[in-house]
Length: 371
Image (cartoon, rainbow, N blue to C red; front, side, top):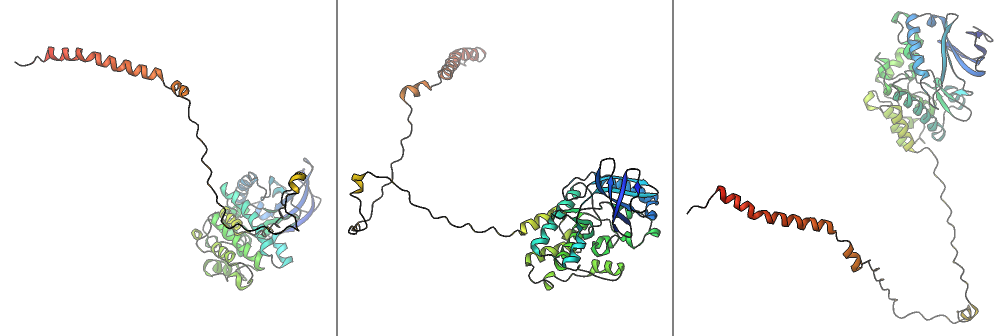
């Protein structure tokens, strides 16, 4: 498939944005809706796998239901010319991996806000019951205004459904960012995405991932058993509190990490990546100007007047008398009596008292006194 190809009689492929072992990404034009989109076209050996097709469609439907400012929107997906494709929101800019290669590393002030955005998008997906399974800087697109969006939800999970005999290294996803439980073949969880965010955060601030090896098997072994070098040994100016957060996120046991990306994002927000607000400059308070009559102003002391004699006794302060409380007028208090209540009460007493002789008569009629 080349540029200027018309896909499914609707999408005109304009330019190739990237090529990977699994798919090619194109900038395209949606002729029906007249808008630019990004289209990921999967390789034919993946597209013709029936099991993968089924799970790819299911994962694409789930991803299309995600609507969040930090998630790339999925517009459409389909199968044409024996190729699976997925149509997504077009984000001008670069992925986070490209930016790391260009800059070397990010400062805490510029890097942590990007990670917080990634946590917001992934946390939203976790609340919707979706696990990304392939969190890496390649799947984090950064626009020119520093808006980060996570992409490629569900593709790694769909790849995992292929039979073991058909697996290649690319089905591993991204061994550099795999969680230990994924490396052991266990099903991923939101905590697995949190671990991968930790690897991305380590690389973002340090310039290199915590584990580097020449083979996928060696990387898997490092993720499962090796302890990452504390990041402050590379970058001493990183705050100790942030280093502790990263080491917690990179724990081998999922239960020792933050359970979801939302939790990690809240911790990073509390960590405080924004510069302190400037201290306000105190405003001098001017004394009020009081206008007086000429007669009084002649008696006020001037600069040439002799100094006033200090008082020989301390000034006495008296406590002001408490404000008088409102006392109800006699007539008003008299009117507040509930005459209906007391009238009914008096009637009840008289009624009960009048029945006493009747009760005594009945009692003695059935129980005559013994003589």
